[in-house]
Length: 171
Ligand code: ADP
Image 1 (tube, protein in one colour):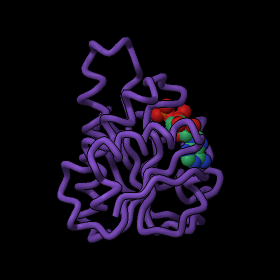
Image 2: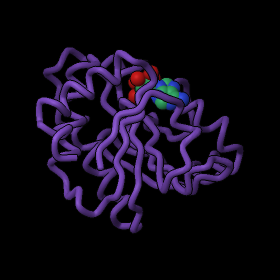
Image 3: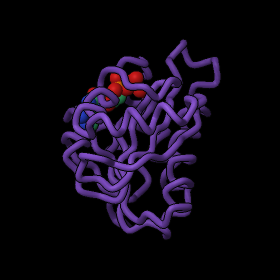
Image 4: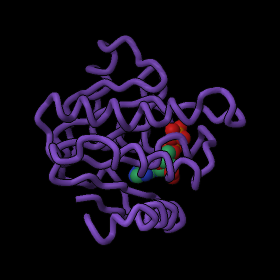
């Protein structure tokens, strides 16, 4: 089931939440900062052992103080105008996060709107890529995939893309 909600991803009791991290995996602002604050210092200690993460890739850690069991950290592209491979890299974030979740037999996962904050990716374009990539993945392995948006505006972009794919009729 694909869902769009508006809320704080750190509050979700779910198998895995995805973090829009930076390449150091050592914390930052936005959703990354919120996740590190809510998870506590154990998360930073585990992240230090991961040696960072490439853009478009993803790595998993435990959820520590979060209600989520695991955190999948992915590094979105910084928007540079759209001709530097940003679309493919963003799609890769969603695809790799789902692959890692599947490898760990995780059945429910929530995504933030990766790259649409500090990294500056246009929200509507990012939502189209997010929805297209997730719907093209092997969704039958998952019970629940949530787009956890932080604003009504962001949620509206995701809902519009889902409607365009008739996902509302065939969730
Ligand atoms: P990036 O550096 O990938 O752009 P940001 O964290 O700056 O990452 O923003 C990514 C998205 O996450 C933005 O749409 C932002 O509004 C949203 N966001 C920020 N905090 C939270 C949160 N606690 N839960 C869900 N989404 C959040």
